[in-house]
Image (tube, rainbow, N blue to C red; front, side, top):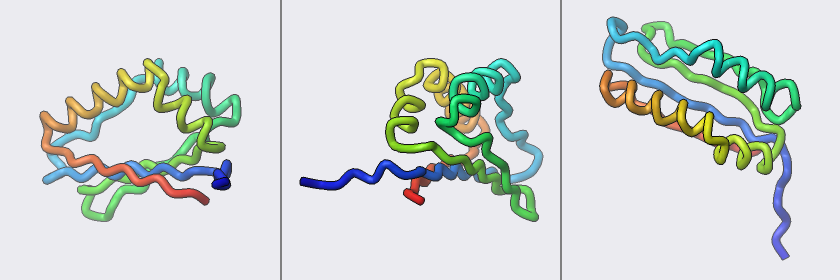
Length: 105
């Protein structure tokens, strides 16, 4: 029988743009409040933080999920899915590459 690690999962989303004249996608306050109420305040996800490269072309968003169950809930949340679709459309339109890395801590 396999053992499933129920530990913290770090999610790093890496955005890469061709030049700094292209704005990064910004989420709405409504979305931020939704995430805070449903994920951060309940301990399912950390607030997260940005790291921006010196040349301004790469932005990383790093946050942690409590466990696989919390990550699965996030992935199946329709409001989160809507944001991801909106962010992907914006990124495609503006030639911003998105890479997502998940790792167990």
